[in-house]
Length: 265
Image (cartoon, helix red, strand yellow):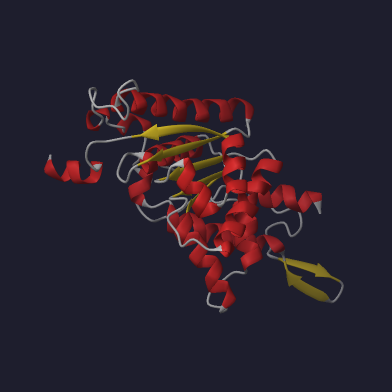
């Protein structure tokens, strides 16, 4: 069983950031169980290998979420012009520009440390809508993929919808298969955490995911529009406590939604 888990954990779809289309490219690993035949034969019986379903789950996630738009998010394209060198959240606090610089350096350090040590230390970007949080998460994803690391980018509300669909047998995969893929990927990106309906069910799903990754030393990159107090209400204090324990927190502020500002340029 341990051998199976090791294989499944490294079988994620890898998407090269330089690809500007929806095409995906999978790094080739030979399944130790079926030797990539997709079937395991025992005597007169043959059954489908676990690797077939696992690859399908991960391919669905990767092709749906790491879009060409996100693939263009790289560190060299992060634009500091949108962050005021004069405005501050508090009178004595850092400027918007200084906060952005700190978050940018934190994102690059996360990549460097992971490549060197595969540390379980994660990172959280919090801030208003259109402040560059998803851009930095995408830049981290692309930087890791350039080094052929295993990354899964999930938009949290969409991921929860995928799980709900399994209850009406509308999804292609089971809840357990979807959750397992998110739990075990080497690096998990959770975009828009908290941008979903507040229910006990959503709290339990997010807690299960974060708690598993904390216990197994697997890092998360998280973006949210919420403050810590708001996160306590939406996803629950026990989950937020774990996030604080495993993530360095950076805040981003802009005077105007960057997407709106870009349309005016």
